[in-house]
Image (cartoon, rainbow, N blue to C red; front, side, top):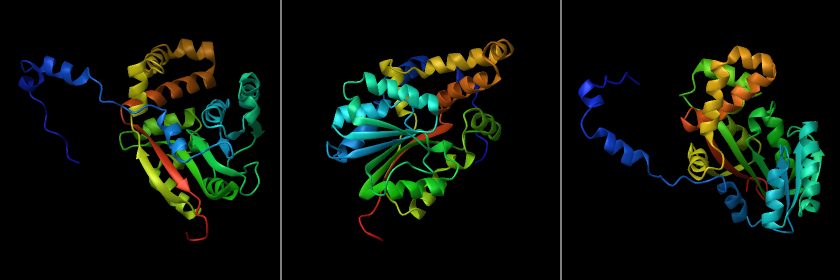
Length: 276
């Protein structure tokens, strides 16, 4: 792509421009919210007879949401002991917690039996997976025939510069190869899944949270500015690893808003019979 022709001063400061910009940018373009992922689960008719695997489920928040909404049972699997402890506490305190169990494990070696689950729910975690082929094969193994793997995952776009990639991936434990959508789709097909849906969410969830005030990326922008401007002091106060994680998390949100990272939803299906 060639370089764009430079904007002139007349174009930069043309009369009436500010009013037009205000009208255009101070109205909602009706972004979809994060509830979309649960709408997809609902469309799959998940109910009381079904078991959902929440892989990389951290504190079991999504597991608890699904058992409450759909009456299903859920198994929350995470490799981090502190996450599992927090998950157990959350489950014990929740009215529907008896329908959620906690297991320690990783997607490359899922602690589950063949065909145990009707749905695998993978939310914003696949970029941590080292061996994608093994992880997807394990997902295929533990799903019932006809079951689904729902993946919400961020991918890099061409706007994310090489230096930004290197710094961000190192700071939030990303496996670089997991950030390429073509690679994910190829490996999913190789594992035996049918790709039933791809929904490019882009900035929508972040826009929606800004508009309704539930999860403000603008705060992450503020945190990133503070972390960068007061780098020396905050590194000393927080420690190097915590500083890097917090800066990475802040940029993770901001980059979604400006198109450097692109969230997508994939719905994969395990065929009911070979080659079906």
